[in-house]
Image (cartoon, rainbow, N blue to C red; front, side, top):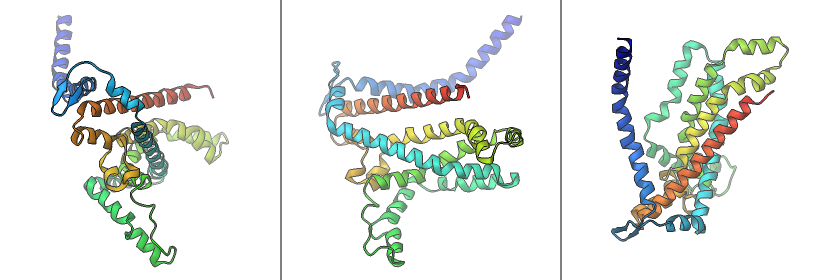
Length: 290
């Protein structure tokens, strides 16, 4: 009877998780497998040659334009991640340690307000702010700091970093805040009682315990930024385009889906490897003897 009961409970558990598991496989695994298979084909206008070939990957590795775009994409994603984490940590720290408990929900609510606005609208607003005759240039000219509008603010990698950093800021603040909230305050008090300074307590206790949130924020920002193609197209200009823009071009304009698939798989492989390496290094650092 006990075995029958366990089997029944196990069967009920499998029955409960089967719909979301099947849904996940259909929406995630199947498209990824299809992209992987497509990357080994070739295309001639509207016809696919299903013969196995590595020519797409050879071209992706040897053609300098793809290497340039991938390097620029990694640089922009890394810059956006560093900027958002450095700006988000003080905000999350302030909310967690200095805002009264009854007001924390209000602060979190205010942090999520940007989600109320369309992503495209926010990008266009930054275009207005950073433009040649935009808000920033007009303000700087009005107060006499500059005589002519600054031309390096828009249609380059700098504009992409600024826009994406603003767009992903809430995604960075929230996981860091959650990690800081989980820290046992008695550990901080114990460190201070043992003679540790405020900076020493932060460096030796607070920051290591908050690292899971920092790593989560890093991955949450870095991975999707690599795949963003809207922002580089609108504010990046020729010098701000990323590998995702080339993937879109291969699929929709050049009618070369296998090449676009090969670039997508290459980008996913590089980003996935970097993410796994980051997780591995942070775990080893956490386990290292002090």
